[in-house]
Length: 249
Image 1 (cartoon, one colour):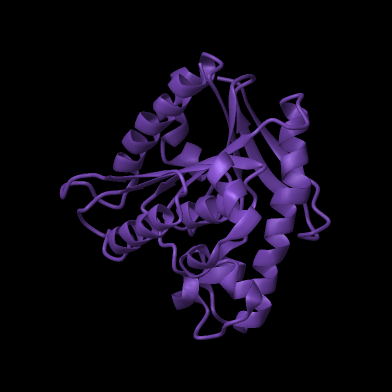
Image 2: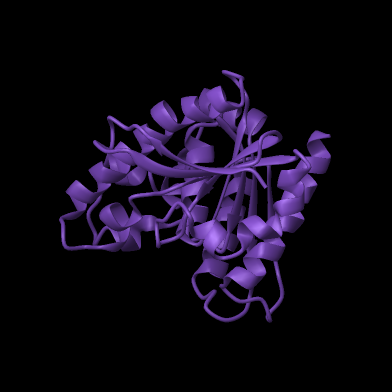
């Protein structure tokens, strides 16, 4: 399998950002890491190997970026207003710096990019897809939490609001909503077994909000033996990415 480690220059983050890319041809899929935030997370946990035949066959190209999730969300030593600004910087990196890098690598300045992730990576995937539908057309969100209010210690602002899908989706309207309806599809997946408490409820609630707004989506709840762990995410990713490939063939 072709793989390459890159350091993507980022003025927004004020440092180069780690990126692992896998494959030479196929649908571009941007992978957001979980709370670990590491670019090599999917390879370390066997996710890349689980999709290896699809990558080698030129069906998929994976772009696994690092995140600043600890800086922005999970560590609370710094005040919430500062932390949400760090997330805003990361969003600008993804949209203004990483997206052009991916499109240049794909030799297309307009190719749609799919997004995926597990746990907090699922939130990132849904959030980017709903906020930037002309770039990210399809999101596979596995075992996600979509209400970020519990991460901001009660602090609220317009920046917090627009990075909380459970808050802003109910108020989508007009041309913004119509564009999302026309362009995007979200797949919300969650097991119903160990360590999925909260994720099941958020997955169902997020699906309900998307349904109420007429936004294309699928809610796929797996069985009570399906836990919040990589063994199951490998199966879920393969199942749904195969369906995406078939739909685009």
